[in-house]
Length: 281
Image (cartoon, rainbow, N blue to C red):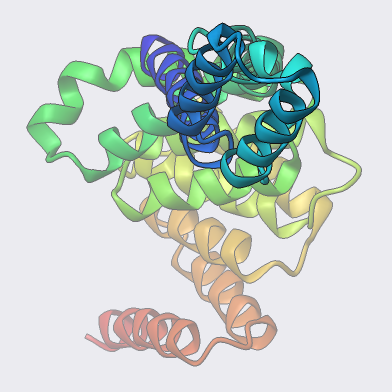
C-alpha cells in the first residue's frame, strides 16, 4: 500500500515539475522578456523627450515595437503572459493527476485485488521455499488460501491450477484442501476424474494409509466413475493391503484397460506381475 502511494506521489510531482518547467521554457523563448523590458525602457525614454512631436514619437514607438516585439503578444497581454510565478496551471495538473492515479490504483485494490496480490506473493514464496522454511509459513498460507477459495470471483480453473502446483511439491495437505473446495463448490462442473484424484491425494496425505477419509473419498470416486483408472488402482492397493489378492488383481486389470497413459499401464502391469510371482511361489 505504501509503495503504491509513494509511486503515485512521485508521478504527481514529476507531472508538476515537468509542466512548470515547460511553461517556464515557453515563457522564456516565446515572450522574449529581455526585448519586452528593453522596449518598455525605450518607450519611456522617448516619452521623456519633450522636443519630439507627437507624430514622430508615435512613429518611433511603432518602429521599436516592430523591431523588438514582432513575435511577442500585444502590450496589454504581456503582464499576464510574462508572469514568472505561473504556478496555478502546473499545480492543477499535478492535483488532478494525483486524484486520477489514486482512482486507478486504489479503487480496484479496495475491491480486493490488493489482498489477491498479497495471497499470490505468499503462495509463490511458499512454493519456492525449501521444506523446512515451508513448515513455518504453512499455517498462514492455508488461512490465506481459505479466504481466496471463499471469494465468489474465484474460478474452478484457478483452484485446480493451485492444487497442481502444491501437488508438485508434495504438499498433500494443502492440495487436499483445494480439491475438497473444488468438489464442494463446483461439483456439477468439474470432470469426474477429480474425485479419484482427491482420494489419491488423501491417501498420500495420510502416509499411504486407508483412513476413514480416504475410504469415503474412494467410495465416492468409484460411484461417480466406476471405470476411472486412478480410483481402480487405489482400490487395488486397498484390497492388496487387506490381503485380498484376487480382488486387487481384478481392480488393477480394470484400471489397465481404462487408462490411455502408457506409463500408468506399465506401472499397473508391474504390480500385476509382482502379484502373479507371489502366487506362483
